[in-house]
Image (cartoon, rainbow, N blue to C red; front, top):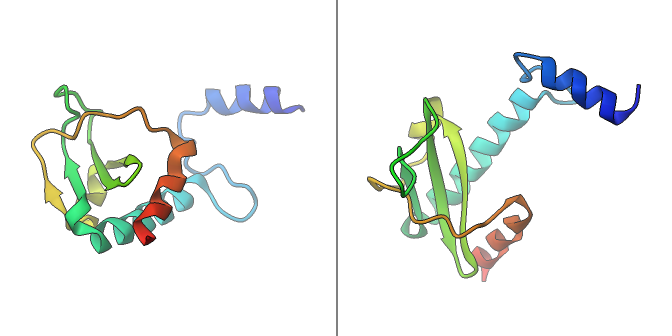
Amino acid sequence: MNIIEINKEIELLEDKSKISDGSHTFEELYHHRAILFSIICNTYKNQSWKSWKHDDGTMFEDYFVVGVTTEQGEYSYHYHKDYWNYFEVKEFPYAPVWDGHKPSDIERLFTLLY
């Protein structure tokens, strides 16, 4: 089976959280990411925020958005409501306007150290 066939099979799965690379499941990696990002946000509280709504008032059901403002712009993630209390940061009625950041912009986080 090639990667295209594997991805088609994965798309058919209702619950993808138990998919594993042999070491970790997606569910476990998602949880780790939430803990690690909460540590970053809680360390940089003055630059961090969370909101139940995007800037336009929309949001995915049972999710919120949390982010940190860096010298190069925002970096944010959506998390399930179960993670809300992991983030002890300012709560905004609406998230800041999305600046177009994407996963490849994760290196923005390095600017927090300087």
